[in-house]
Amino acid sequence: MIDSPRAFLERLFHTAVSAAHPANCLSAHLPPPPRGRLIVLAAGKAACSMTEIVEAHYLRPGGLEEARLMGLAVTRRGHGRPARRVAVMEAGPPVPDRAGGAAAEKTLAR
Figure (cartoon, helix red, strand yellow):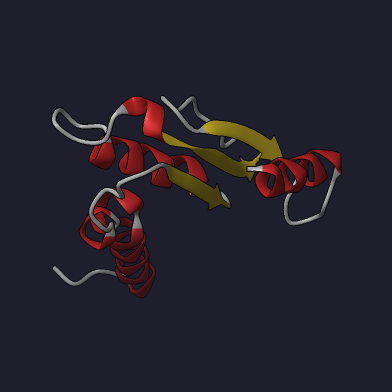
């Protein structure tokens, strides 16, 4: 059976989104753990997904000591999720707001 053009395009869209999800592509591009601290800065709607993958990659058994990993993930309101070591802040992109300004100040302070 042949898909409708809409169904075909929706399937392509979902395939592309899945391929670009941090769980499917980020780990292969992460460098070895550093000797010192690892500071993670993530921004955007995928910030928490990226943070989860980074924490799982570096904090796995035999990996980086938890105290050496820190950072900040700034995501859009409603997209935040707790992380193990990285602080998470929600802000109002794409329109700058006070929370975004506070996140920028916190990032620069690290």
